[in-house]
Image (cartoon, rainbow, N blue to C red):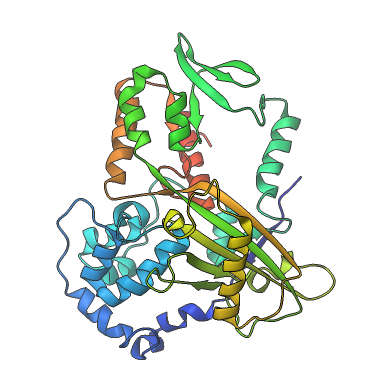
Length: 385
């Protein structure tokens, strides 16, 4: 099975204000043109702390209004998290580095390429840069990617796969590790762990107590995902979707217009409108209660009411699905980079044949976790990939 890539390069109306002419105009909900914020930012002194919350960073450099609305909404859309707690250094490292290198976000983003040293983009990444992809997916869904990898490994005969077999615990051995799973025990010279931090710490031996302590302190957020499908083309606007600041509705994170930016996933016959509504995140417990006991009906009602209020859609969806994704997005709170550095320092000091990859450490997006996996293998093989 070969993944068939699709991409979207259509800019959404949400970001038209970032074009040069848009900087001179006032767009609701902002009270003045963004040029004023940019001009102020260039002359703002560089921060001196090792880390800072996203809200504090944006407030200091671009003003409280942009922090309360834009940064708040962005953090809810990407991390389902609270920008007043999330770390700018870990969540948006390119912003932190721009200030550190140039003393200004504007100058840093304009003058620095930000390309990671020593990692050369492959053909597909080069194509995405050349064609200015805004988003990417696969024609039959992103699930095609792990399915294709699984099929390739099975056919290669060079890998032993244990699917749907939870790791119970791992112990050091003379040659590396013994991994105890639900379906047996295997030996490994080196472990590349993509397990969530808390799942890994529960499997580690007690001799790794310092590492366990760091991993236990990495938090996560729960998100309810509601998919709705409506008959016909019912949206009056075009774009990727919209995000909601926490001051307006803490329980509603945002709405994605799936059928608009990836029409390749629409039904082959009969026009429909597909929407994804994201709920909860860092506010899940506060708004909806215990994720273990929340009723799907209440989440569906919240989602349909949001679509009605924000998009004017009064029709009844022809199809819907509700899923509660428990602890699905790591929360990089202030000091996260220190926890990651401490974890990897412990591994190095104890000479453990263990690599930490996945969304718990260096980025939560699909692109981030693919990159972290590639980097770990490159480090292990000495650049031989």
